[in-house]
Amino acid sequence: MRIYQLRVYTLSTTDALERYLGIHYLRHLMSFPKFGIGLHGLWTDSSEVPKLYALVSFPADADPADITAEYLASPELRSDMEGFDTTAISEVTATQLTPAPGSPLL
Image 1 (tube, rainbow, N blue to C red):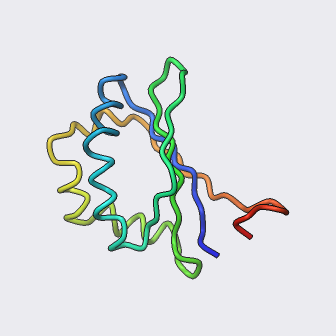
Image 2 (cartoon, rainbow, N blue to C red):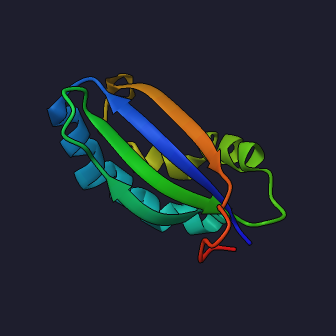
């Protein structure tokens, strides 16, 4: 079974969120597979703080921290983020998820 993470990206403004989601995060869809990263969904909420929620996964035998570090240092990420002010992302949290009994992911 793959390893799942919920990532939450907090952005400085709603405009930054829309730009990140509409252009730059979609570019990740092309680069993620090279690193074994799967994307299973993207969400926003109605809070006053602009946030993007992403459900991602990694191969079962992988270390998500190692893959993330490799991706963050890659030319693919630099290309994905070209034209975006990365200081607009004020925080990123990653929570590893464990399937509960009865989950279809077991």
